[in-house]
Length: 413
Image (cartoon, rainbow, N blue to C red; front, side, top):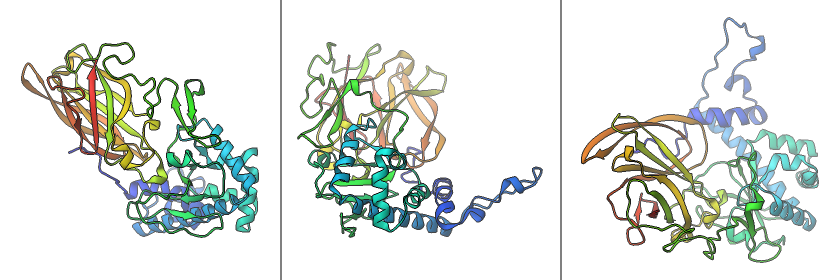
């Protein structure tokens, strides 16, 4: 069984990411949860604080979600102003972060472009701007965007809009959702709202790495909408530039594997992307592992992150249909791998990084050879299964394979 466990909500993780970011600003637990003032403690006898109890962790989570609810409600009421809605829409269109047009919320409010929005949130909540900014800082870092691709295709800045705020992915708990009057909007767990919705959720994006707009275009299904960035050479909805068929960017494609060929991802589909609607498109990682000859030691030979724009947000029904994967190269079949390469699939949700060891096997001239691979994972990552890829197995359009929730059609070139 794969060592990544689904949603390991341990005290180790919660103590690091929730207590440290929340207790200081919201519940005043600094002394009890993160230790005494080290500057006043003798250097020869440092004070070691006790780990937070389950109740302290839960209390901090409740307080942080309550603060996010207040912020989300204030944001929703602020967006009743049509000029602010238009400004937010334009800023979402222009942001170069991810295919889903994300803004780093805290920095956005602190910049000139977000000052009017911060003032409007403050007015809606009966606070001053600096109090709103302090409220934002008391919550873990947030990103702000319209997570459902269908919403980005139809919202033109009008008042038919909702705002959601959620800290954790809880399949049995509905997202906290407000209309522009500040009223709570009921929504069943697991249901995506039909009304276009903005979301405040914990940061998953690396805001130090913007998209290269020279290699992408914003696909807008109608003028004045937010849209979705896609790479210039491939539009997955129309198939333009995505390769496929027998050619694939000028290469000859094969339905068999062999040493010296490159494994190519032709198509993929998902039956469960492990993302609620307010977290947007899934961040699917394909991690390939192989032996290094007969030494008993293996390694991760490549890790491919599936471009988010290839998915219809977190819509399981839409993502269950085969989607072109641009004939992306996965790995080169080297003779040192033996007959088998192991594929692990997971959805990246961040968290604390850990190291683990996986016991695997391959074959050389029909003889089984065991090997171990040491690699890292994060405690919020969602496992999506694993499978052995055998060099002797047929591939191509007539031979899809899968891990349980992710399915693939591979070719070689």
